[in-house]
Length: 95
Length: 269
Image (cartoon, rainbow over all chains, first blue to last red; front, side):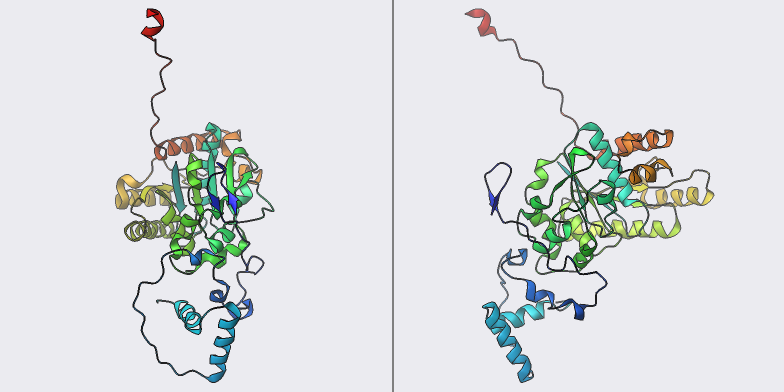
């Protein structure tokens, strides 16, 4: 944490963007993991009120391998599978 | 404190030139000024003689936690009064929606930082994407820059519509201050016709007089100097125009405080 010039309010320190060295014309598939996987408590995406929408079930059949990948991802990031899927769906345009 | 976004939908019309001209007028008066470069071409950063900064506006928008923008502020080569949050090529990655409240990321990251400046100028990219949306969600004034050409005029109208949309959706304090015509050649019939058309369409929003084409502008930019320090008849004319434009953007001056009042008590004891 850093203090403001007045020395009163502590604030977080700025971090370098993960894609700073990535040329803008790099295709998305070559850019590594999708942007939603880079988000979390370390960026302003954690800022703002939690979702107030009512939660509903979305019964979707997916390949087993995809379920495994999402579970692994959730475990790695200390999140629930639902949270990982929710983040992924939020990335869809026009949500 | 005034936060001004300088935008246009069309590239190459002189957004950075106007932003730098206003920064130069502020520099000439010794006003505390912050230029936020939101154009991935980083022309304003170059003209303000900023090179090799640790952080850029791309990092600010990627992080976006309250107050982090202060870490990206560097002093410009023009002197202590003008500071910059520079741009870089990878800022292009930020021109798409990102997470919740995507258009408010700049405003959140700046937090109270603008209050420490007399003037904050945001140089936008030539598009109405997420970078411009962030600029308009942060600013309280917007200047649309155009050339007196057919396509540029169309772009100016689009930019004014974008200002209305953002003002209605995200930033009720925002208003369009001026449409500034740049690179005007009075002896060019096409320029005169288009300037008239612009005045018909947008009336009092069009800033008069237009900024003339002037060789001193690119020369001063190449020399990384404020236009106010460039000594040629054309650049002096542009500098005066920028002074007048800046006057319309800043809050009116308060009357000078009077000297110490006479105290009767001093004479009664």
